[in-house]
Length: 435
Image (cartoon, rainbow, N blue to C red; front, side, top):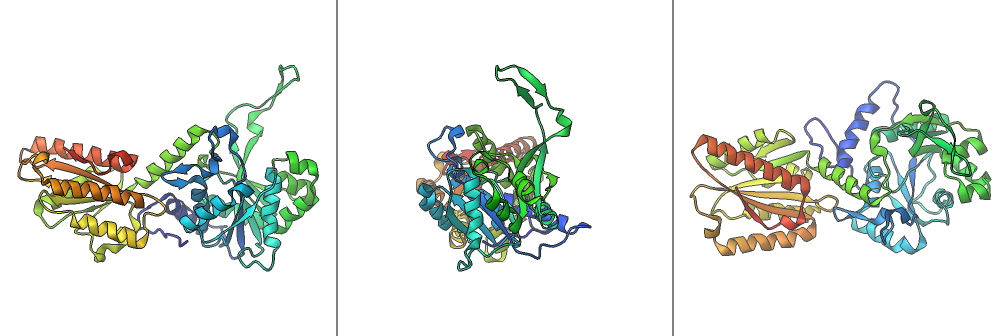
């Protein structure tokens, strides 16, 4: 998968691109070196998700029509300095994982079978690099171990973890403890408590020199395989390598319970609604409305372009949200051209694309007076393109020369547009809302 690059002129278009920009800045800081050695990732994804209370393991639960594990894979695949992502799954989920890899075009992934415990699964993933005849999994210098259900991992942190692992032999992300940790007696009474300021929560990702962590697993005991939980401890106990600990951001949280899926969806939606492209026709009224709407949409970065022609293909290929302005009575040919472009480029494969078709009514005709065949065609198009992850909404706004009334109408238009872009509600596609 090709990485979407960010620059001062490029808008942050999806969670991956947003995070990539941070790492580019970090790499320029003193003390940061470029990654000029092979790096790979092992994603243990063999869990059953019992705490989720759902029939499918949590890593395969969908958010915006896409499995959670696909978001996590993309967080690594978009980085050019990461070569291979080994995904370790239960044998019964092997075909499901292969289908996800194919559907979402994950080009760096190698799928292997997991073991009966987490540590056995990680060791299986590490052993995939021992097969010298498999060109898909060349032996890396550094290997990153990460949870399949932690999709919001920033490139800045991955860079720090990787460089520290190469220098120290092992590294890991940590977070401050939220609650005080206590020890209890066998009878269920308080024994003692720990001083919270001295302790940290061990998180993922964790990085290792490949030879260090592979040797640690070769030496560890059956007890470690069955009941162990900390990879950093194995590196210390069996190889004498003391990990460099790096404090990570709050976004390192792990999807564990059903409510976490809703939180993850909210984060993705919020990130996707950071920018929009306003497309206006040549009419003076439409151009003026576009400028006013851009001013009102101060919570997101917006650009105004005159049309959705090939000359503006850069916007069509990068943006996730579009507001297409036209006069009432004109057809939605421009919307059709946009949809065709998205189909040809597969732009909506990873994240849904929102198109809000805004009709400016200059004739004071009611919505009901519009041609029935046009509304039917619009609804039919919306029903069709939603299958391709394109969400098409319609809004009609009545033009008035009364300044106060027009200002209120545009403000209402702004509120509805923001809500449609932010919520991405599939149930409202094909509707023509009236302002």
